[in-house]
Picture (spheres, rainbow, N blue to C red):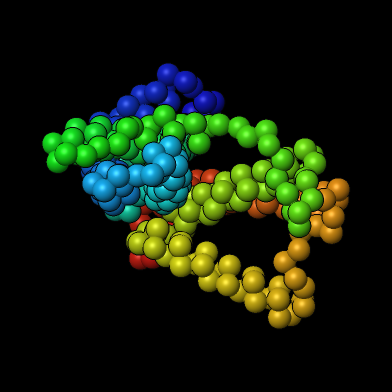
Length: 275
């Protein structure tokens, strides 16, 4: 089989969900408990003793939950190939009557869209739990869900400033694109970690990225003698455009490496690295 078939892909996706439903329920429970703990930490004191600015408190909490959601998505990326940790799992995956593209896409959707839905379900359930429990203790605050979605998917038309100067719309787009590509690249690095490593993927990938960031900062400051200055004026966007192009190439490279490693996985692999 060489051609992608949508019906066969659906069967592969459903089979994965059926075979790993306990694992996915565990992830859903982790998301719920994480959000519930965060709800109590963020809202207990403002609810108990009152909040001067309720809207500010809700928006601040929404930003915190978006940060948690980002880390959950990275954790999801590190589970891309967790079903290939064991010999039995690799046998079951490699013997499926489906193309590599269908198998890869099913795992990718479950580790990205699936984890986003896990987190969203856990977050909403935790928010409802907090709203149900806190009034019994004599204090409460409104739901964080609307502010969460408004912050996550909202768009700001206001200009930002750099060194007191208003930034043009073109430069604002470049800065926004830089932040977006940076998050996508970070996520792609965890996909690579899942393809290369077999144990402690999230921890080892995080440590590797931290070490890489420290080394890159040291090289930039000590060896190159350069300051972290992306542009020389608010009207000059070429440096940001070049940096965005580099980030895009790195993202494509990460996805290519992940795909390449996936298509070369063997049933009998090494202890730490995937073959």
